[in-house]
Length: 587
Image 1 (cartoon, rainbow, N blue to C red):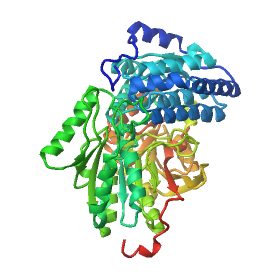
Image 2 (tube, helix red, strand yellow; image 1 turned 60 degrees about the vertical axis):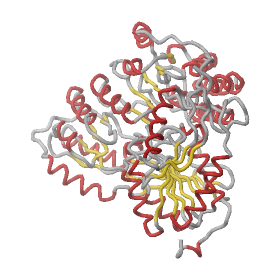
Image 3 (cartoon, rainbow, N blue to C red; image 1 turned 120 degrees about the horizontal axis):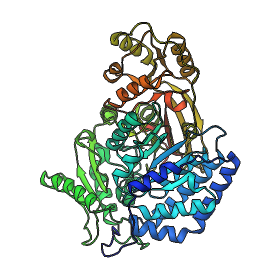
């Protein structure tokens, strides 16, 4: 169903059957071609995407409710992924067969990004698109096959969650790439631990409670434009979208008037019309859930502003709701709903602490004209992508690698220099001997506390390309220590040396660590095990049983993403209004 027009049916789909899934798994075969050959095919696919732009735009608008500007941006991002991963295709053995599960909010771009990365590394791919958007994925697969990707290396299996469950719990699958909710990512992690080989990689990009801070030095017109784009473009259906806006209380009255005035200028309607600013949310289930959240705010007299909603289709009007702070948001509201809080000038660090306390860490925005404040805030915020004096959506492949930390994803960042190695096979040296004794939990916790003293230490910065007037820097920050489980002291030492060589922190086991200890012990970013598969499975299951961020069991050599969080800072250096350094004392 077209979410903007319930009377319009863009197409039909047959859900993959159990027999289809078995056929796909039985025939999946890694792409045995040289890196330059794979690159040539992916570049041909990019050409075909661009050649077929009209059909792509039409399907995206009718199936996903995307506006034409959003459709253009989505095609550009999908093509960028194809060309970027083609240019960096690794000359290393692939993991094997990857399941790629993509979301409906970027049904072409994220779908293509996952697949093209796995294919660039030579894997076989089983692609499971979102239930709501199978038509655009079918066209993408058709074009990739036409470009020369072997059918055995790329297969499409449309359907609902049960298809994804089957494709993440079959031992013939060697890795999973997933973009979606944090809760679903946790279920996938547990299914993989139960059924896949220990150490099978999970690359998950999940949700976020994203905030923006606007201080009293910000240029209001510039900030309002960035807020409107960040909160309401794509009907707020981006994982990067702004959910909670903090405005310094000194300016909030006039600023809110300007913000609501800008909201009133927005046009809702058919996404195929160039005049439309905000289209529908994806379906009736999404609409009803968001509407219930708005109604609760209305009942509590916290509704500050809303627009009129069209009568037909799954539309939600842009809405502004008052909150005390981000802690009031119990979950991510995935639609055009912005929550506004105020803060006192001397409570900036308390706001930062509240944002970090959510446990999420995807995107963050800052509007200020004080350079020292930019440095202070971006040093303290724990988020994968930070944007200064611009909107906080629309990451560009190669310039702004995208992905979060904590509850917002596992890393490494998509469209960045550390992403493709996770799709290649990382073997381990020959395993050591078994332990003769055990290591107590108290000793592990003590060692972790010592090793984590340098957590979040900035290791290095990469300056990435971008347009004139924009600064893009990718920083690497040390994660919590990895537990090196051996088996045996020599193996644990070799594991620790591999971690430290990448700039990470390591704790060497001094005896056998029980799986239960991995579940109960906090402060580690995962564990390395180079021993037998049976014990490895027990460790994987123990890590999957944890609450909080997903942490891996590493059965091969670690990579950069295992030891470091990546944080990208994008600054609009042309932002209007000039630097307000002299206002620092009064801001």
